[in-house]
Length: 372
Length: 138
Image (tube, rainbow over all chains, first blue to last red; front, side, top):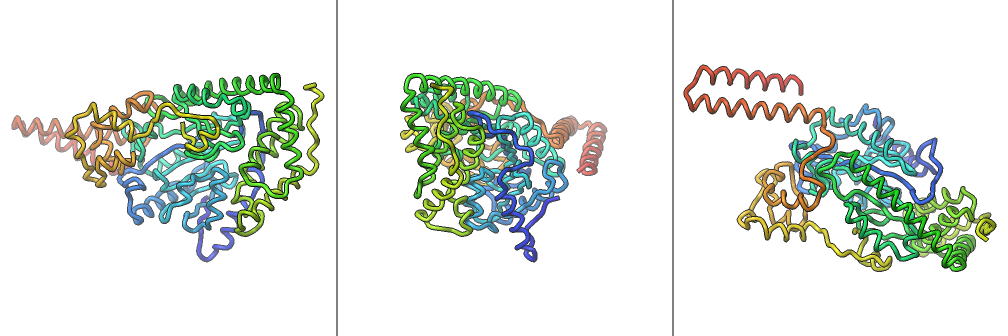
C-alpha cells in the first residue's frame, strides 16, 4: 500500500513523513558500520513510452506520468508501506533533509511542479518521479552489499514494468534523457571513506586510474559536490554494452583494489608520519568535545578523523557508527530539523557544536596501546 | 572526474580528460556529415543544437532522429554500443509484436506490388489477427 498526501488528513500525513525522516536508522537490523565502505546504492533510470522526457514535458504531461507511475507502484512487494508525496507539497527544509539523507538529488529538490517521490518507511528505497527521467528507482543499504541492493531494485523495477510500458529499444536498451545513462540505466555506487589517500595526496592518481576503468569519483552529494570528510562516491560511468552483473563485478573489483590502496596509505602514514597523524586524530576528539561554534565542513573533517581512529583500533568500535550518523546530522537541514525551525547559519553553527559536544561528551582519549 | 573545480583543486585533484557531452560532440561532428546538424525531432521539437548544448534528448523518438550523431558518441562513451542488460518482460513481447507487424506489412506491400491479391488478403487477415491479439493482452 502507498500512503498519499490527502488534503483532509494533511497533518497526519506529514506527521508520518517526518517520523520516517527522523528515525535514527533505516531498518530494524542494520549491519555494523565497517571500515572504508559506508553504503551501497543502485539507481535505475526508466522512462514511460509515449511521453516526452521530463525536461521536455508540459506540466500536465508530467502530472499524467506522476499519477500513472504511482498507480503502477501500488501493491509491489518491494514498496510495501511506502508514502508518496509531490515535491511542491514539501517545505524547503524537508527537501533539504531528503537531499542530505541522499534520498533525492539536489536537482529534484529544485523542481517546480509535477514531480514526486515514493519512499519506503525503512528508507531503503526511494523513487524519484520526473527528475531528469520519468523514474529514478533507488535502493540503498549501509555497508557493502550489491547483491541484496540489486535484488530489491530489480524486483521494484519488474513490478512497475508489469503495469506500464517502458521506453525500451532492443539494441539500445532503456532509453534515457541523457545518453550517458542509456542501456541498463543503472548507476551502481558505493560511498567510501578515503582519508589515507587524501592525506597522502594520492587521490589524484587514484581518480585518474579508476577513470580509465570507466569508474567515476564524486563528492558526498553526487555530481559537482565537495569531498568533505574524505567521503567519495565511486560509481560506474558506463551503462551500455555490459550487463548489470558485469558492471557490478567490475565495480566490485575496483572497490577491492581501492580498499587495499587506502589501507596501504593509512599504514604508510602511521609508519612515516605517526606523531602528526595521532596529533590530528587526538585534536579532532578534543575539538568535538569542546567546540562551541562549528561549520558543517569542519565537523565532517573532524568526524572523518574519528572514523579513522576507530579503524586503527584507537577508539571503541561504536564511534564508527556514531561518526556515520553524525556525517548526516551535522548537515544544515538536519541541524534545523533538531532546532524544530529554520535558523540562521551562525545559530546553526552554535547548535551543531552543542549536538557534537553532547555526542562526544564521554568519548575516551585515543588508546595507543596497540600502536606504541 | 566529477568533483567541482574548486573542490578538486582543494583536494589536489585534477582532470586530464574533459569528458563532457559538448566536447565529445565536437569530436563527433568532425567525423559526421555536417548536413545532419539541422536535424529536429518532429515528435518533441528537440533540435540538434539543443542536444549539443544541453546533452539531453527530449523523447524516445529523438533516439531515431539523432542516431547518426549518437552512434559515434555512444562508441566513445560506453563499453559497447549494444544493450546486454535486463530485458523488460513486457517490452520483449512488444518488440516481438512490432517486428512481426513490420515483417507482415513488408510482405503485404510486396504482394500488392506483384498483384498477388490472394496472398495480400491472407496477409491482411494475419495483420488484423496480430493486432487483435495484442489489444487483448494489453
